[in-house]
Length: 586
Image (cartoon, rainbow, N blue to C red):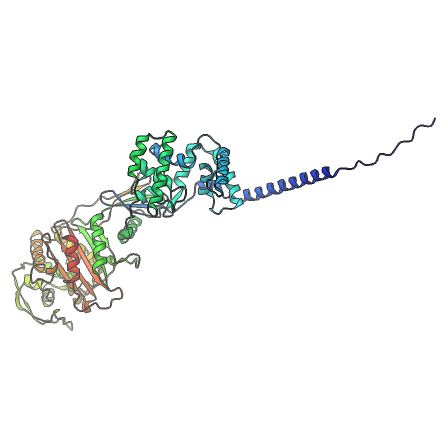
């Protein structure tokens, strides 16, 4: 009847080992959860991938000289885009050979490469090798900062997987080659090739490709400019790897090894900065707002520009100087606006200053046009118009002299007497025909160069004379193209107008020729190819000018102080400015 009593079971005791395992498991799960949260936070802090891939920047402007060779660029932060398809194969093969030889075989991360790097580092007792793939390096170069943190490394891995899923291997390699920064803060191997070897990436040799690839490990340490020995040593290793991996033959490697050399010095683009600043303003006036990269074909003669810039820097001493050189049709072949662009970006070739006696040809043209000749006699004596009584520079008067002598000695009374005879308005109209009339003041002091004008304007007056009296409009740009080669501006000049008769021009050039002969104020400018010229010095020796010509061009030179203080009393247009002209054209 009576059943057994149920025995109450006591809870099974968990062993110490079990509790320890449970604690470890819970700790692992908590760490895993924390890691997941950390990765999520890091992921949420990542930059916008599409925004960076399609980043906007200021349009880059590349300036080219009259031969189509690049002078310099503005706003350029990247080289010309390159790709595996457009480059010689050995260019990208050099990169793959040294940076990630299994790039086309592994995924975003190279486990085999990481294991090999760990073993190498353990053997050497230091970080001697890395395991980053080109995909990881691309993620770092394109999207991330270079700060070595855990968060950045996690982002790098996430981005590497994103890149491998979105792009092909070739596209990733293109992205890497176009975004890696190697020299001068610019991105891309094309920029590096242009700055180090003065050649685009598509024209690099095998040797140059190896030297660019050598920089990828540490751009400054392995620069062919600052550390050429280290660069060449590593480039040789790269050539060996390219042979080992079947990219080039042993003979190609040997030939390339002999061509490894230090990088060229970067040309001093400051020699062109006054010019390119001037051209940039012309670009804006021709096409307005710039929304894409531009290629601007200019009239600059590179050799002449370098000669002009270096001569100005060497000869002006404590003063400032400027030079403009025009071809007879108005093409600006050189322009230097000061002695040192780095010290001052103000372009003095465009500054308005008093031309002094260099304005006098305008007055003499009026006389010649009204029947006078170089042999016509005039009288040089003290002369006043109203209360205006200027003296000759040396306060000496020559009496009855020929028009040619009056011009060569730059006397002041004769142009004033001509103005009285033919009228001030006639002189101003002549200046207008030559292209500068609207800026001149209607007063007699203008006749002796008291109305300010720029060196470019003054040189243009003389260009008209030596252009057989035909109108001249200075120009600096022949064509502007967009990045895809579309023509945005193409110079289409109108036919020149005959503003001075050939007979008058013939007499005027005879007067200008006498200035550079012995006894003339510009005799220091004389050289075998010099056709003539004219000196000018403003009141108080504040401005000194010389404008002269050769069969190829007209060159204007100015010297003075920016604050309008006088120069040395011996400084006139016939001294250093005339000598600068001679050095430039000789």
